[in-house]
Amino acid sequence: METTTTKRSLRIQARLNQTRRKQHGWLAAAAALAVGCAPSVVRAGDWPQWGGHDFGRNMVSPESGLPESFKPGERSTAGEGLVPGSTENVRWVVELGSYIYGNPTVTGGRVFAGTDDSSLRSDKRFGQTKGGMVQCLDEKTGRLIWRLITPNRPKERLPEGALYGQQHFGTCSSPAVVGKRVYVMTGACEIVCLDVNGLADGNDGPFKDEGRYMVGPGKPPIALEKTDADIIWVCDLVDQLGVCPHDVASCSLLVDGRFVYTVTSNGVDKPHEKCLRPDAPSYICLDAQTGKLLATDDEKMGHRIWHCLWSPPSMGTVNGKKLVFFGGGDGVCYAFEALTKVPGKPIHFKKVWQYDCNPPHYRLRDGKPIPYYEGDKRKKYSTNKDDGTYLGPSQIISTPVFHDGRVYVTIGQDPMHGRGRGLLHCIDPSKTGDITKSGCVWMYDAIERSISSVAIADGLLYAVDLPGRVHCLDVATGKPYWVHEIKAETWGTPLVADGKVFIGSKKKLVVLAAGKEAKELAEINLGAPAYGTPVAADGMLFAASQRRLWAVQKGAKLMQPAVAQQNGVKVQASGGL
Ligand SMILES: [Ca+2]
Image (cartoon, rainbow, N blue to C red; front, side, top):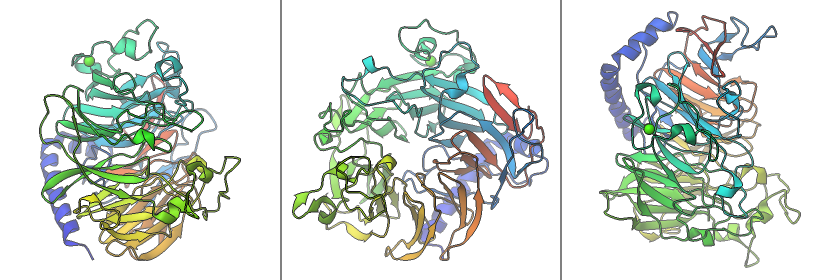
């Protein structure tokens, strides 16, 4: 049964889509022309931020007509690209790099994705730094429109003793698009605001030094081209806010009009013993227009943080007030009042509540605190056998999801730490103060550690844990209907769309039927791990492996088997090349 809220939100979404269809009629028309064999109905519903249009970040899309499966194509042995006719329901495929952790966003006929910089090899202007990129592609064809290159942050631009950037994962967060601006946290621990049109229509904003920025300090600036990004402003969280990131800087920003909310990716030092910048802010709000700091938290979480802050915030209206929900590197979920106006100088967020996601038996053994890193299977002193039974404290890496007056959040650790017991909480956010007891609606402890967020549709909650078990629960009670085993490590969040649940995993992309009975519809091998989260927009599914991004559309065929080279980005598409 659909809930009234779901029906209402779908009706609102349908109205939004109608408006967008009117605004972007050219897109629908052009897309229908480009794929002659596809159905004529092309929806113009976009997905502009992590969570789509929903600031609660519930990964549910109103798109319909999505195929149950697709054939990603076979690699040609006679050269680059795919064997002609080996794909099914695929509109285009783009090879974007070696790491695609930044889940795509789609809006205004464009697809935005964070990647590493390995596809830069053929652009002679750059020496590779194993840094990151933000790539903007044409939604119809997959062709490159522009890209931002963010060089790897060198050691001398970090506090001494930091452990950061060694994994070369690139830009790991989802770009957020509002109007003509794109906001993203780069792999270099900056928040950047970009022009949605890139440099094709000139160099906008106060930032004019893109040619120097994109090669990194100490090198001569490159000559800019129309396919380069146009930076409007940059806020460097290390230089300007004193943050010391750990491993990777990542947060899918929440942009609410004038306000950009994010965690700072402040974290611990190389030996994982202490935070080098314990008084630096954990949660901040920047001015979307200028990049200026508007607000910080006053939690001083650096004094108790275990690893690093990576959890993207969400937002919801509770008791008539907009709240922002942040997942802590200390295992605590926090709610702060959202800003309502631009303050004259930076202020502290007003805290409304906090909720400890680690109950006493997760934190204490025989009355003594359980060391966090005892749960890291790689440590010599670890007692974690990596079989999912280890019980100890975990942090919040997933997004706290706000839906229908409740907050849902999982706990977990860096996947490298191995398996362990997790916990999924349903929180009543209408309380104030320490709401660990008063705000607990239900807990579900048959889940292992998870860095995935939940998706909720039609009264059912879908959650997935690190070893790839999908849990379908009654959202009201937390009682399970079924558990399905993907049997592969899973980092991403389930996407519910068109009566299906799409989940990426290390081995394959899995499609399940949404509903009270477990039913697997398809397993799709993408040829490389699919750690990210698929998204749906404009009647298409956008799914990525570590290397490639597929635009999946029912009935679409790759019309031209030739591979187009665009500054190193290889595209196979159905039309327009
Ligand atoms: Ca500029």
